[in-house]
Length: 211
Image 1 (cartoon, one colour):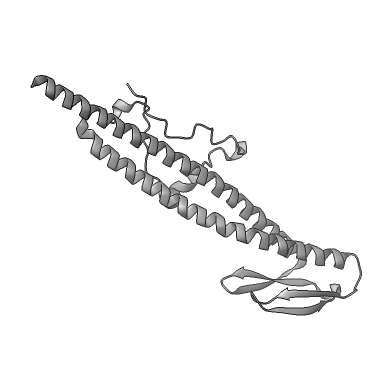
Image 2 (image 1 turned 45 degrees about the vertical axis):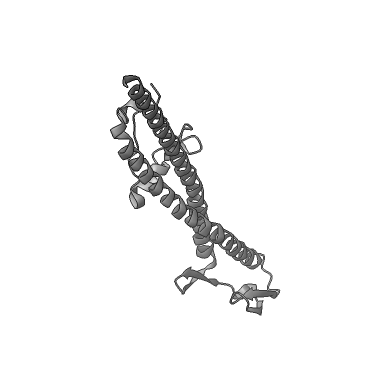
């Protein structure tokens, strides 16, 4: 009797997580937005295919699961790519705010000559006086810009950076989890198909013997 492959990852999902976040598994994170298809929990092949009549619906069910997991993987990958672009921008902005804060705290009012980008191909020169940097303006997205005191801006950017890095790490774990599920289902599909081939040959051989 062929053992049915384990559906879930052979590596404990909590291995690279904090103990406080044990319940925050990839499946838990994906369940709310995507509702992943329920995968077989049994490890015995015979629980799913006992006759050749079970082969076609089983293969169709597995293929539907593979398609859904691949769809989730593509969307998770797209989100990870967005975070990869976002994180350096947040980090760069945070470094700038910290630099302005350090110059202000140092008590020097020596002008800072800088160049900043106004658009992808448009730059402008500026002279910044540390004494005039009581607040900074931050883009919050959707064409929204707000003014923040230096300390609040630093705190906000630190929180956004931490959240973005955490989300990116989760995306990487989620993609690994989804790839494992797809691979396992593909192995299961191959086993069902091979079992069907063997049964066809047996039936063909038995038919010849009866003749």
